[in-house]
Length: 165
Image (cartoon, rainbow, N blue to C red; front, side, top):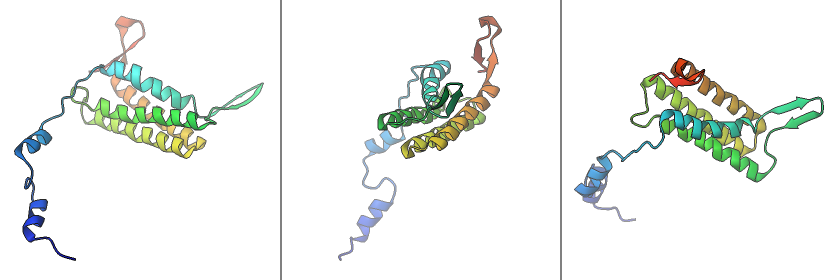
């Protein structure tokens, strides 16, 4: 096997070699983020509906009439849970966007949301009802921890809640 000339190896390994200035400049520029929804809307319109799908798909309901398992029973049902778990995980990124992140602890809460959302995705992919139940509980705990820090009663709106920042 023939070895490439040392100049080619150096060009491939040295930063910027063989790359046009325009490409380097585009890579260094910040992406043009545009937040379409505020944090409250992100929570209410994106995160909560996605988490509800997970919570409504995990566990058991026991009544006088009998026992009902909530876990999906079809490929489509599990795919729906997986897709909503991906929304939960990706919402962590939305909450860390410039203009939304409120400091290091906010970032930690958002990262925890990503982690727990990924666990729910993995559980759905594995069709593991017990793991999905556990992941749903972890998502709930991630939300609760953040809400305890950042959500306070809003006296001006009859018991609704407002973000601290």
